Amino acid sequence: MKKFFTFISGLAVGSAVALLLAPEKGEDTRKKVKAKAKEMGHDLDEYSSVGKEKWDEYKEVGSTKANEWKVAAEEALENATKKVNRSTDATL
Image (tube, rainbow, N blue to C red; front, side):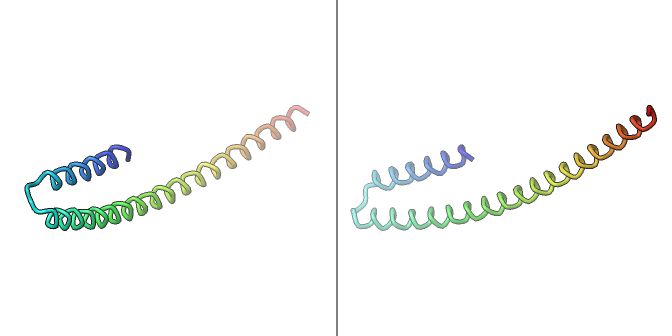
C-alpha cells in the first residue's frame, strides 16, 4: 500500500511540475492545475473506495477464519478433556 501512495504522490508532483514549467499563460496553467487536481481527487476517491471494499472483504474473511479456528480449538480441548477423563476413570 505504501508503494501505491508513493506512486500517486510522485504522479501528483510530476504533473504539477510539468504544468508549471509549460510555456503557457498563468491563467491557462492555473486552469490545467485545477482540472488535474480535480481529476486526481476523483481518482483518489475511487481508489479509497476500492481499498475500503477490499478491507471489509479481508476483515470478513479474517473474522470467519478466526471463528473457525476458535471452534476447532474448543473441540480439540473438549476431546482432549474427554480422553484424559476416560484414562483417569480407567486407572481408578
